[in-house]
Image 1 (cartoon, rainbow over the protein chains, first blue to last red):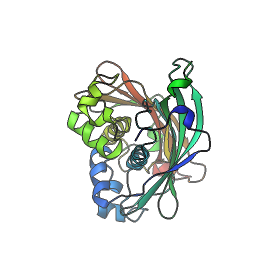
Image 2 (spheres, rainbow over the protein chains, first blue to last red; image 1 turned 90 degrees about the horizontal axis):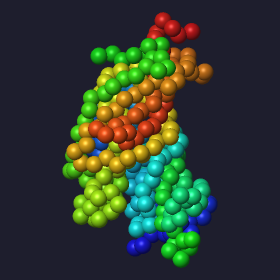
Image 3 (tube, rainbow over the protein chains, first blue to last red; image 1 turned 180 degrees about the vertical axis):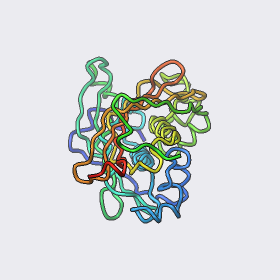
Image 4 (cartoon, rainbow over the protein chains, first blue to last red; image 1 turned 30 degrees about the vertical axis):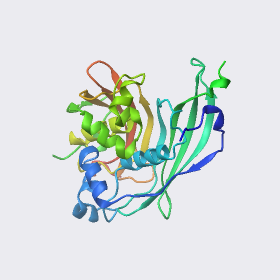
Length: 151
Length: 151
């Protein structure tokens, strides 16, 4: 399925993504490699912490959200990568078995000043579990312009 | 090894971490789960792209950097988690076999206004391969104060 061109995104447009369950073993496997802290890797130690149990690495939470957005196909074939992310906030813990729901809202769109075949879109992500917002961040993405719009 | 308390970090202090090699199979495994784009998962498709070959997910690059910082032990037992990240910039592609070198510089430290047992440190990360800077970002981390400094 082809994705949307720059001109098909507009500020305020919202997309929902497929929910995804995060398991205890996925939390531990990710953290052993990328975020080796007892809170994410050691169930017994985590139970004695202020969180009362294992919680997911925040890096894993944002990566899951980005993956679910890509799986919508909305930038498939039109996305040209991204220069970065802004304002990542981890607002509540993510625990084993949590179902993560990611929504993506278009916060800004503009044509590139230097490359007339593309534009820059800011996607504002909100990640929730079943009870609250667990993370927010903004991704900056380059997107192809619709060919007949180039000038 | 116990980590450093808030008072032992100072602006301009720099830490180096162990270099780490990122393999093709690690790039693909991460991306299939968290960043499913042909540039990260499909060698043949990536070779036809402007990058001329597979490149790593930017999410993987920053997670590796954070993991290498944790493995220095500098915040072991004193770190109290973090509320977020700022200004993630992906500046150059990371390719299979790249050796990633992460340095972390203290950009700010202050005592928490609401919780006198802790402070807030901003760590500015720079990730390089053997030729250039590939990513930069800032992590905000809560750290315990040295017990005799609490008031």
